[in-house]
Image (tube, rainbow, N blue to C red; front, side, top):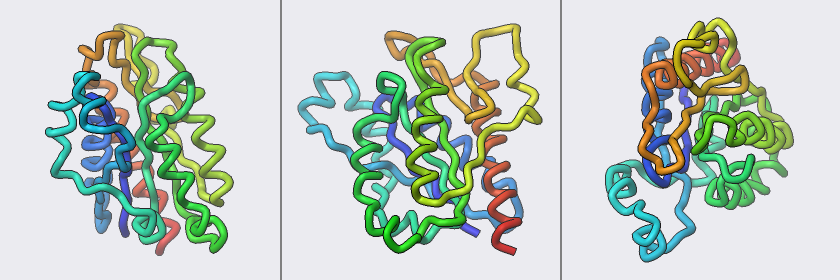
Length: 203
């Protein structure tokens, strides 16, 4: 049973959540986690000007996802940073290339789930995941979020991402804040949760 985790991460925040989600997937018997990057749309020159070169190098060992791989998975966890309350352009462009999968119903009945990040505490994490769900519903996917059985959602002692819609992190306006333990725990829980649901649907 294959769970594909396809993400875009400019500075590494979503990459960390994706890695943790993969660990959650692997904690489920007979579940395989496949980590993939969404194709980049920016030039190396622009990435360098944005200070993203080093973070991109750290992810260079992760293969770039192909549209075909989406249809081969039993479940898909998507990771995207927030861009004005929506998914990033790189992920949008990748999903816009899935028209053939839609026409064939290739993703119908597969589990779909989303993780995200934003620079500020109320920077659109929930709207990003909810608007992402619209695409998954058009593809006929079964949506899985992050249920309140993940106790970390009730945390009040510190600032933390994560909502019933999916795991998330807050990067800070300068990108210096990386996922906290609670946020990583949420991503790991979500990975296992998606894998458990997909396992039930495929047996």
